[in-house]
Amino acid sequence: MASLDLPALSIGEAGRCLRRGDFSVPELTQACLDRIAAHDEKLHAFITVTAELALKQARKLDQELRAGVDRGPLHGIPVALKDLYMTRGIRTTCHSAVRENWIPAEDATAVVRLAAAGTVLLGKLGMHEFAFGGPSIDAPFPAVRNPWNPGHVPGGSSSGSGAALAAAFCLGSLGSDTGGSIRTPASHCGVVGLKPTYGRVSRFGLVPLSWSLDHAGPMARTVEDCALLLQAIAGPDPRDPASATVAVPDFGAALGSGIAGIRIGVPRRGWFDEQKGTDAETEAVFDRALAKLETLGAKLIEIDGEPFSAARKANQTLLLAEAYAYHENALRRAPEKFGTSVRRRLLEGAFLSAADYITAQRARVVLTERMRSNFATVDVFATPTTPRPPEAFERLDPNEQNLRPSFTNAFNLSGLPAVSVPCGFTSGKLPVGLQIAAPAFEEGLALRVAYAYERAAGWDREQPPL
Amino acid sequence: MAYELTKADLEDRARRAGLRLPAAEIERLLPGVNRAWRQAEELRSWVTEGIEPASVFSAARAYGG
Image 1 (cartoon, rainbow over the protein chains, first blue to last red):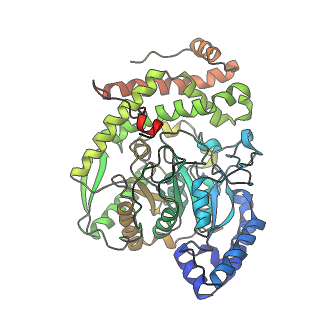
Image 2 (cartoon, rainbow over the protein chains, first blue to last red; image 1 turned 90 degrees about the vertical axis):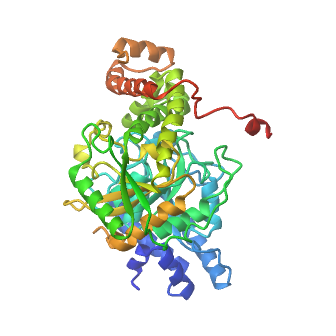
Image 3 (cartoon, rainbow over the protein chains, first blue to last red; image 1 turned 135 degrees about the vertical axis):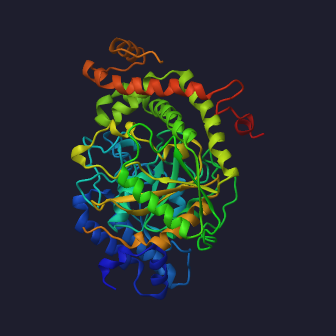
């Protein structure tokens, strides 16, 4: 196998090869590092590459495997992290001048768990500054570009995670999601991203954007790989006050059991056509994905989209207020250290009232119940992940996103798990994502529907030409 | 219909919030702030009597009960 092919393997495939002795952990790691060195200059997916550390970890993990110590399916798998996960001794910048040289003293819980599962850390990935506000054009690090077309945005805020996976720089990644920040770059970069149920994965050690909406979660090139990563990082954590004490099931157990009889709710009415509506080509790709799901035995049921649409208003109100509260001191002290885009969004939160915030938390109860009540008649929800394909940098309009529906916000507000899986391309060969959301703590069901679709559609075999 | 904030309103509120914002930045903020205000206002129609906020204090969590 040519070394250039190794980074493009799925985690499952690489694990099988490592155990057969087809190649070693250092060889796989070096192949990823070589690919980063060759191509990241035009994508800027990485802020920090930890090459020396990665090779040291790889040698140790390889020795373990050869000595019969097997930590499981992630043993020896090279991964990279969104640069808001605290990493002990490794700078964690949040893609911002505010934290340009911050070196945390400890690891995030998810980082500890990934390391215990035997992953190799390749480095830290670019993002939207502090996970908010859009591509960071005036931050100390360049904006991440889309491997399918570097003239287009990769989506955010976990931009580097999406781009690094699509470019086959790493085999797995962790992102964070407050309003769609895992699922949007997954959709725009043609990879898979899962926002788990709120509380399923510890947020300890993630620099917050909005405490009540932030989720940590996995991103990978296949649904199965996402399930493997989730398995490693899920579970209670006393250091995260929102952590749920819910048993962690085997997320891969039912992946291949098919979707015959599964009822898919499509909340199109009152949502997809909100304001400027959904891009016609995106909706056509989504409709073809629904037709494919139907051929696999699923039943499609149209449901009311109104509470899903309204959820965005509550999500945005909570996010703005909490994000401003977190950054208030820094904004008073040195606002100029924030990039233009993130500073403008953060400051919007300064002008909301306490009553606005509390009203949004009350609306959250009502809207969540309205969304949840649909599970009496459907098993999962399906939407396009984003209302339009990735924009060109040169035509980027920060106000445009407010004029289209947000298909991701509703599942941050409700805390429901949601996965984005590639479902095709536009005529300009830009990826489109299909979002599947499931009842709370039913990540396995969302993954099962996504897996059935992925296997039938085969989009995971497509790779961007670098 | 929510009250629309003016540039003068924003200047006053920014000062009270301890923010030092140049006039040009206040101007740029105005559309986004008013959009956020409208969103928050629209949410009020969803809330009825007896609905508590999603985030509540938990004595059990605070005191390990």
